[in-house]
Image (cartoon, rainbow, N blue to C red; front, side, top):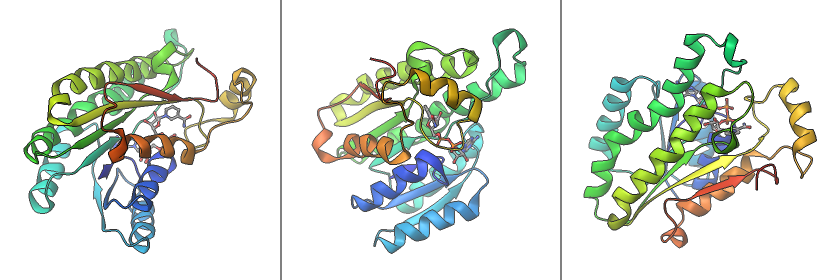
Length: 238
Ligand code: NAD
């Protein structure tokens, strides 16, 4: 099982939960190798195998090089969780082209960069497989100051649904999880106070609560669930 952006936050929780559920895990990170190694140690202490891969999901060649080499050595993954992502929030008139591009590259282009090298190895396993992508309520309904992020996260939903159709007959499911406001480094204090007023549950979600939903979609029991978006949002969007 590969989890991108697993050195912290939601990705870390997904990786640890996958290990607790009995999967060997490949922990991916961009730059925080020490944090990723700490997650890997925790996973090994649960009795599962774990290795760390380091690359930038926005770098197409780096993704292909690292992933194809890893699959060649260790075999195709049963599951891939495309979790790595960034936000660069600014009202649209003031948004720089760089903020637009970085968010599209790191969230949406990464769908292609990570999954394209992995899909054929997954199909050739001739066994059930799982792909889970991370969108956001911003991708479902849009959010002020997040035109770049909303576009990328909506794009991930479309791409996930299309890929689900291509892979369904191979017993490979593709589903998308769309979190609301989750307590990680991505959330800043200003956004938090405004958003809490709008969340019916009156609190942020936890990374473990998102990981629990991802874990179900990764499980054998979820084999007939594909092309779906499940939002974990405390009632923020119905
Ligand atoms: P986070 O900032 O804590 O973690 C993001 C992870 O992605 C980090 O491990 C980071 O290193 C990695 N990453 C970022 N850019 C990368 C790159 N170019 N290459 C490789 N790795 C990169 O954020 P999080 O809250 O844990 O977010 C995880 C996912 O959940 C993201 O896709 C995010 O958009 C989504 N999400 C988060 C929230 C929230 O409220 N926290 C809400 C909706 C969706």
